[in-house]
Image (cartoon, rainbow, N blue to C red; front, side, top):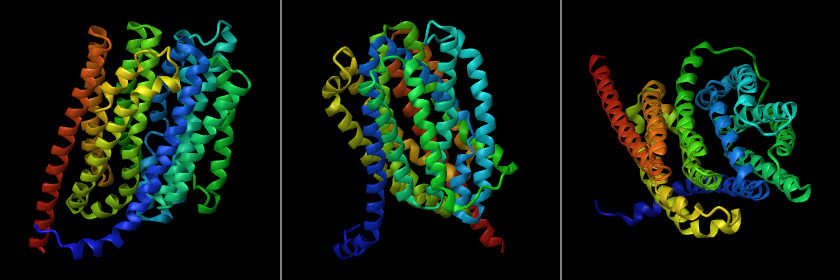
Length: 434
């Protein structure tokens, strides 16, 4: 096809608002990402390699639990509200009920189990209190705070959603700077108190910011429970897969390797935000396009894929180039930091590709196929990572991560294209039978 300059110039005014929206979305997430890295750097320097290794292990456990909290109800808060804003009070109430009930159950379970596994303090009472505060903060309070962003996205109020992301990240950075740099906090036990107080304050402010959108109606939407669980399970299995390496390295490797790998994982995971910035913008529109069949959204999905590839390659290149400067920020005692970061930088590209297909399936309501792809990939991947890390840490860990990301990418696009073909065929048959 020949490029028509006139058509391209004519399309620019239509593309400009989309570009601005993505710039604002990605900018807010990148700013939040930078703030989180600064927070991580402050804690890494203040705690030291040994204490920071414990912090990484605790974070790995709560990262899994936070995806269980709410049973995936936040997805319907975007999908249902994007289609019909009048559903917001019911969806918000549905979310709050599931978040609080499941969150309390997870905190109680964690408070019973974790003290036998992790020792944050030699004092048993202090150890249990610190663990309890960390569980409440990283599971219940984080999940409630994240609901704010979902509420604004469902209402297509992206500037407000962006502000909530940046505000939360800056609040945590300010707390870390104040606690560690001003008051000299050097232990996870003391940090647990500061972190809890900060999250309580942010939760109050964010819940107050939602008051103009309407009061919640507290009732369970039964048909959304199954869809929510299907939506949440991939995140749970992915969290398990993403943290089993940290737990295995904690057993097999020295604290410096665990600390360096934990920093790199945070950096690489944070780089996914540039892709999330795009996906959070297009998810509501994909939900509307696919309301009458996923085949209606496949053209838009392929366009999104091209953008995702560009973002993925750009993010990977930035991580690779920036790697040598990381010891300046995190400390020179993390000697493996640069090599680990460069090895894992390429995983961003494969995730960018499969995330587009997975979001298209979710927006169209195909949570079953979506869950099967991600749950199978992450469940098998967790076993593969555990085995590879046990056999050859950390080289086996790196190889297994790449194999998993590539496998999920292939499976996701094969399923999406097949469902789109079936949907188009079914739509054509309906037309002929009328």
